[in-house]
Length: 274
Image (cartoon, rainbow, N blue to C red; front, side, top):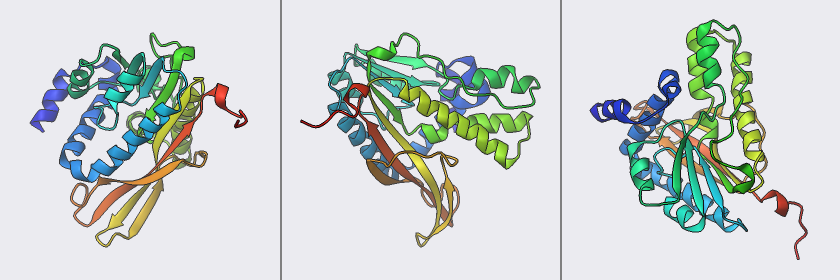
């Protein structure tokens, strides 16, 4: 707890990331990683290998954009920096570990961005008395030309995007279950639309289902992490043991079913094979 408090006090972050709870959640993820490195390792390795495979599908390698870069536990930074002219890491905040790792590479940059597209509206609207949650509007990434981006990676981010905004809204504006689902799904759809706005290869890695399991490994509860949003068939799927026994409960653990979808660059889609 002392380490997490120190990180919260010292990590550079925009004011909105502190006020909405994004920075606190990012630091909490680091704490969970430190407690469960071994359980998380297969998931992190699968994520890295998926991104590595996506790199090979890029005919041009000008800019790689990594959405949800976090502490870089699941990001193969060195290969990205070696294969692309420029790598842009995007998140609400960048932990010291990520900042130190990026210093090794001249072509790696950090950018703060609200990838949910609702934080300003939450702080200016919902917290000020608005009676409905905002529609997500994701801004362009500063100093990134979309037509120069040859790889976009969404790394274990999408299912997390509605969580902090939904918790923030709940403090000011009671919503019924249907309204909560609509708000969450709008954020998820905006993220997909944002990714599809780029012309390069896209690599989406996300939880699809969160499962609570008992000591015998039997599923006692399953939740759709994407709030009913449909996605194409994945290229790969795997299990992430995100909360082993003892993290949340001595009797139950939580695991995520993760899927990965890599889509070719727009100029390669629907192109007949030679």
